[in-house]
Image (cartoon, rainbow, N blue to C red):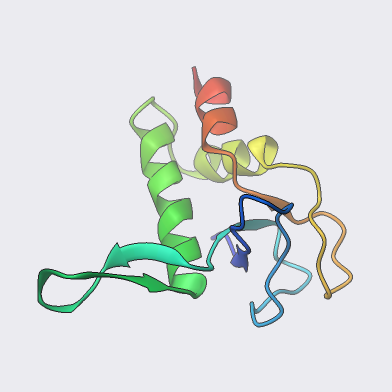
Length: 109
């Protein structure tokens, strides 16, 4: 199991954990969870924020590296090895990094 926190996704600023994300000592990775453009009702699209977007991103990267042959616990290991360095947060967590899809693919090759 992998606990995924929500990070900001403003391209003009460095990523940080959102204040409303549920993060604790078991949280080691974050994924964008603010202003995510996604599907909405009746075939429409809309912006959303939440850890539901973050976990979907992490699951997608997991599926990507699974297609390269990673499986089981190796998926988590690759995601954690490829994350960025610690990102700023108000939870005093020093080892939470943002997910890095390209880094995960490079490790899995």
